[in-house]
Image (cartoon, rainbow, N blue to C red; front, side, top):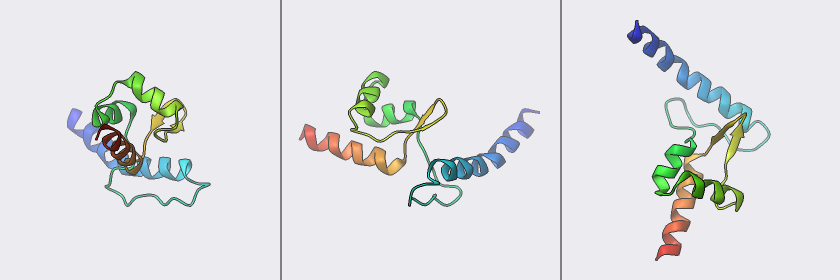
Length: 94
């Protein structure tokens, strides 16, 4: 039974990601990534990538050091924006 649920969830994931992308960026010139590619990171993933705490990530969002996109109560980040923030952090450290 779990296998069937996982298969169903995995088949819906790209469809849901595409629709979320369209909803978030419907008023911008950004285009959505092709199916099968990572569209967004969540807060925990970004904090882990940047090697910072969630509290520090929240401060970065408030200070516009990283751009966050809100979808209801969810906070999502585009991979290229995470990379830009990581480059800024590495530049400051050097």
